[in-house]
Image 1 (cartoon, rainbow, N blue to C red):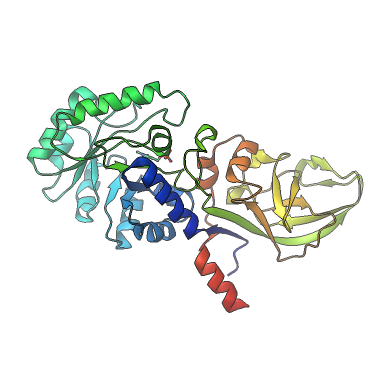
Image 2 (cartoon, protein in one colour; image 1 turned 90 degrees about the horizontal axis):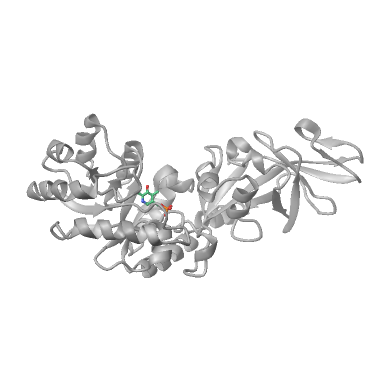
Length: 362
Ligand SMILES: *Cc1c(COP(=O)(O)O)cnc(C)c1O
């Protein structure tokens, strides 16, 4: 109730994407649900994904996410994908959260009930032990009985040229050869789509692809459907006369009688302000231009000739004619940033629930 904008989360699309990606990877999935499940809502996504047979567990970026997820009690492993501070180690281990380890000192500092994934830096140069040091770290973890997994992260797997990804994979395999058998994982979504099954690697970590998006050159590889539809309420409909301008700075000026609808979604909700002058939305099933500056809480759209009233929905993006990919392009950014930018004012609604709610509400 009261929300001006809703992110409708399609259970069907998410489950279908997970199935397609697990099949393509030939592996189970460690589903990244960091950043509020890429803006889709951590709890809703985790509950749906936890029921999917191909989901082994979840990946999160920060301890707060790990704690929130652990509190849901979904019974699936959670891996923290960034190093904990020394004070965070024990409380996270107490919650059962798997921890990344990149040095012998970190391995030695773990409590005896911790479970660790050796993190190997094969070329991203962000986190992890260098390959020449990683095997010793892994063996130390194994000696202590704490080694559950080992992983690395690709820097360029979503690009057409895969030579560096193959180099990273060879370095990772070189480390795995010196370890006892572990749950190994490397591929992000780009890696899953471009490299396919990686023998010996039991898990894959597709994030953006699980939410329905692939780089243009990989779209044919797996049938992915955008999980989120973003819709916002029309709050006001009014005529604008020829010569008048709309929104801050008067960037757009009417050349004819125009019917303008104001919609309750703005850059504070995650609509890229830089999409001004390019953005389109769907109103009454038609693709219509956003007029003038996108504001903090609102934007205006040309609805001339359409039967639109306050309370109607405008579709800002979805699986149809206007996608997050379009919005990201208009805003000069990427799908990741648009999705993770969806604000706290936007209500997340799992699609089955929405149908129930509408049935109840008549
Ligand atoms: C975010 C993240 C992923 C997922 O990446 P996508 O490009 O969204 O598939 C995988 N692994 C790690 C370590 C990550 O941080």
